[in-house]
Amino acid sequence: MTAQLYTYRATVLKVEDADNIVVRADLGFDFTLKISVRLDGINAREDEEPGGPEALAHLVSLCPVGTVLTLRSVKRDKFAGRCRGRLVLDDGTDIAKQMVADIYAVPWNGRGPRPVPPWPRPV
Image (cartoon, rainbow, N blue to C red; front, side, top):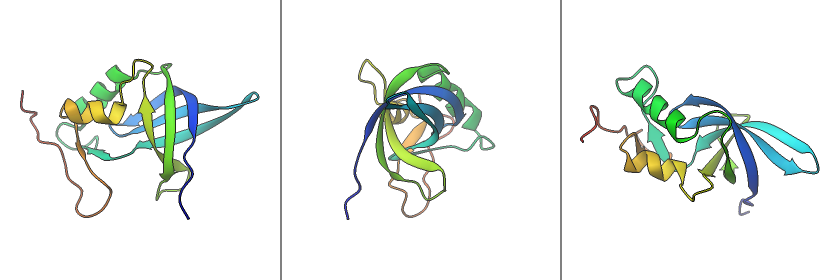
């Protein structure tokens, strides 16, 4: 069975770490859902790793609390209560792709060893 993809307007409530964001998704008809979104297709350093706090700060700079954006669901995440998704700003910026372009994250399909971005970042 193929996963069905959905698109929602969402507001950033909290940036949890450099590849997880909590949003309030507008489901329509005055219904909203608070959900944690794992940015699909990437991996960033963890907060306690070298470069982790800097990656988190960069993600916050891209989409601070209150930012309204588009959430495109991809699938349920392996951790309960979280989905994998794409977050896109109104100017068309895909947050995950921007994190990779800025070398704060690396592409990852979730299989195999967890890759990490280089640190310090090459400039």
